[in-house]
Length: 93
Ligand SMILES: [Zn+2]
Image: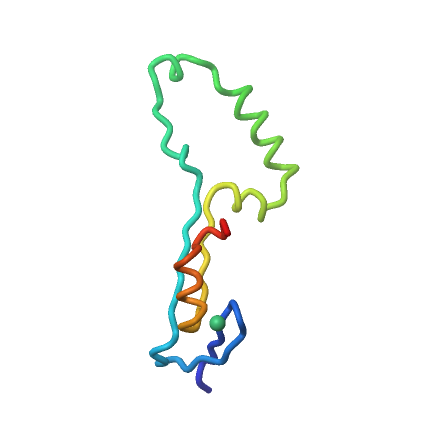
């Protein structure tokens, strides 16, 4: 059975090799992920801080944790929606 594609924006049916099918891939991640560790940081006792973070993580929804760290999204779009998407990729209109 062939994989069925449809536009994630308007629902229009798209063929797998459709020249009118466009793929949008979005990666969202925290920009502060790459933290610089200083000499001062290394000297500090982090055990209490880590225990506190683990306690926080324990109470959080796993999906919520993932949303805060890394998220990758993929959408299929038809030609019209692709054009509309490129006009306003972050929905600021
Ligand atoms: Zn569409």
